[in-house]
Image (tube, rainbow, N blue to C red; front, side, top):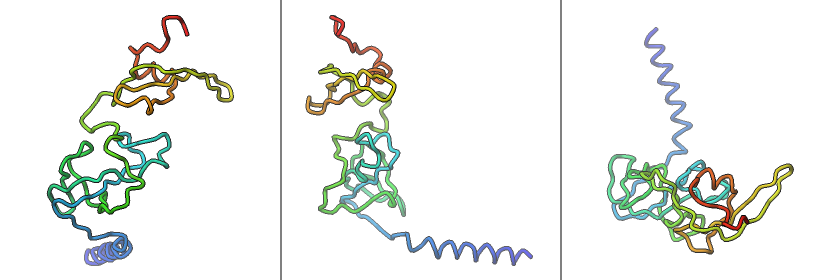
Length: 172
């Protein structure tokens, strides 16, 4: 009875392995190679846009410092994470499209503060959805040039930056 159970488990494992193995890839990187890191769709630290579906799929390139185990690698210098798993890496080729630059990385892993602070309000506008009128502000961030100013809802700015003054002294 026990032998029959063991044989059934072994057959089940072999069947699962038969279907899973074709999707695996045997990839190894050496020290000094350049690799890209896959950006998870729901990532908060590597997101570079409003729509996650349109965000880049990879960031980097990162230089491999050393191999830690069979499937783990240590990057030379990474603000994202100290260890990468081989399944999340792709070898760096000459194609540069669909990548997140290092300057776009929003939040390092060890930081607990907001990535940037508003410096000044450049403009304001009111936008209306079907039933609600929203006040939006064109915000110049302290760590970005004026060209990278973004429109942000007033309610969001008040929630995230409660000490930042949104309205001018003259009441506009």
